[in-house]
Length: 459
Length: 178
Image (tube, rainbow over all chains, first blue to last red):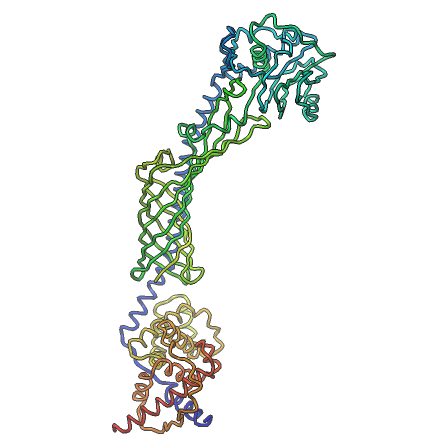
């Protein structure tokens, strides 16, 4: 068998080794045509990359323009914030001492604080009572008239009237005279849950003669605080003589004069950041879209694609929140807000592949998308440097649908059989949305963006 | 023949040099392609793809072996790729058990012309024809063929045996016509 097999091989190899078949003249033409195409394909990727680079540069310029625009808006907001009037309010219908305290600017605040410091320096021993008494039916409006009066510790009323503290974080920003060489604190006698805090004590002792931030002071029901400088503690039994009002009113006046700010995390957390943020200027980031798509080949080079696409929008801005309820000392706080909007969409896209090299394909595409807003999330971080202030997290729904038209140039890479990774710089036009959100889509309907994702190809 | 200048031109993408290389080898390579094809059009497709590969992969040619042998391997591989792509080797299942029943004694001392013999080979079922070409003409072993076609070695042997039997039948039939 082996001998016969070898004989056959020898015979066949002898016959066919130099066997020739004359090609037709057009055979070379076909090869030449393909070679020319290949040469062009070597050039085309450079054109594509150059175009993509140009596109990105345009996108960067465009985005930069958006950012600049937004920054201008934010600057305006910042100025507005500085000039925002602060109003200190505690409800007390019984009190006739009802005037408004306004702070025009931070400069004015500082001037006022300096004046207060000078006035306080006149007293050898100054004790500041920094506590809050919440009486639901008290109303207090402190005016500049009151604020201009010297604060005398002897006018601070007795602790007997301190009642009804709410559980809250209280942050005190007090200006202590430079003459105060020793600062102490003690909780008021007879209180159930005094705010004893060693860290607090240390902070206080370390901050001699300057602004002091009483950080993380936790006040419970019926708690209070006496801050004392110099030698000895002043007895505070005498009722107010030059204040007409309840202890809460006088305390409020003192707190204002001492530039006290209070905040209540629980109250602030209940703020609907989304609705506040809608009316503010936004700093938009380019949208990011990721898709899981199915690509159906129609003809050589042509395909239709659909699937699920996930889009995330992000914008930043600032809001001001007035905490006028909880501790009833009204203060405006500034927050830097990050808004995240999430969309789920259905694209229908026509692709034309104009060049292929092994697993890489270059294509142009055009199509429509319909997107449904899922949720809008907000993270508001306090801009005021108050320890204990917590970020506010909130969310709400996005109503309506968003329609868009997209066209772009893409590159795909087949990483396993049928599956491709794709990236596609695109230009999209977003039609008027029925949604309730002011988004980058509504402000800048013509957008450069980057589509990317995974595509399953059916041939 | 010294192909150095032609190859240098081809490596630079010179169309004239590519044409020259084509002229030198087109007939031989189309002969190779024809053996693996059922018809001339299929053979021309393989030749087209093969020459494109030659021109694009010429930089991988080391220059140590004969250029023709290097090109022949490319054309054979191109033919096999097309066969795999068209799934024509699907039927090349293991017929090892049938070998013993096949009369493989083929009388090849015939007066058939090369073209007549080629016509018979062209008419072979693709599986037979592929293994027959690789084993009897290209000189590959069954082990090598099994690896190339991703089939069992036994399948390669059985395909070859059946191809020989098929060839014998056709030659006898051809003689009976004469």
